[in-house]
Amino acid sequence: MSATREVADVMHSDASTAASVPAEAQGSAPTCEGCAKPFLRKRLWQRFCSTTCRNEWHRKDRMGPTDRIAELERRVKTLEEQVELVRGHLVV
Image 1 (cartoon, rainbow, N blue to C red):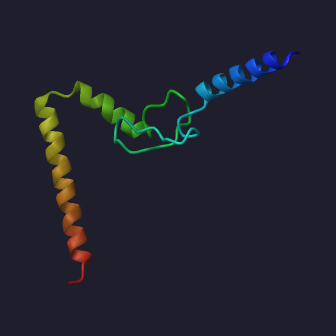
Image 2: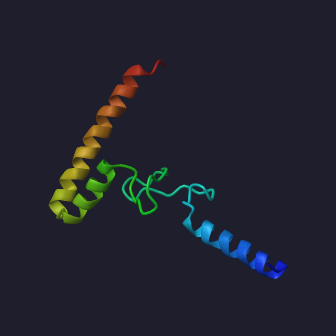
């Protein structure tokens, strides 16, 4: 086999390997489309970090404006409760 052919084979194998390596292995973790947090993929095509994030993302597509307002109000209430819990644990 000629040296040129060997170099071409190595270059081809490196290019095809790099394309099939997940983003995590190349140094950058993908971001979940549901919660926007970085995560490690189990599959190359995985877009969400968990089933919960995937389901919530798809549910948001079906929500109308009033459903979205109710969801935001529920989240605000939950955050306010968490803030009160943290304030209770703080020593001034």
